[in-house]
Image (cartoon, rainbow, N blue to C red; front, top):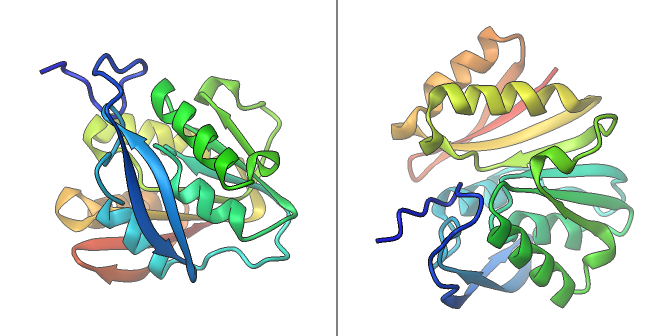
Length: 201
């Protein structure tokens, strides 16, 4: 066992590559994944619920979208494929995940609309029309809250965040914490044990 987590910055497990196939927003995707990244063998069930139940961007959306914790890029690739005008910033601490996201976006012809970076490489003055995340619950509650305190305030005034959290991993308590922190939170869907939350100012 390598001790790797999907939130390891530099996974040490060998890059055992595999293909993940899924459908979202009426389109089929085939992305390359690898050992050492989140849900390497399949589209994570929470991400699948998020992409099915949240309001995917309309084709005319512009501005900047954020995929927070992008993994190998399923959310990034779906968002970028739906618009020619918006730019998707794909953020992950995991260097292997970032490389896979860039590779997958490039193969789909989306490289001109995707910026793949580590968290500290995002410009301080950049704000986001939308934030999408299947957040890394297993990093612990304090770290998770700190991550959301860092990124949610960077929503544009009319921006919206879409989050998916498993109920048994604290989805309901996270919804309460967000509301108590001053955010407007709607539970837009509950499916297969996952909560899809819409968060606005």
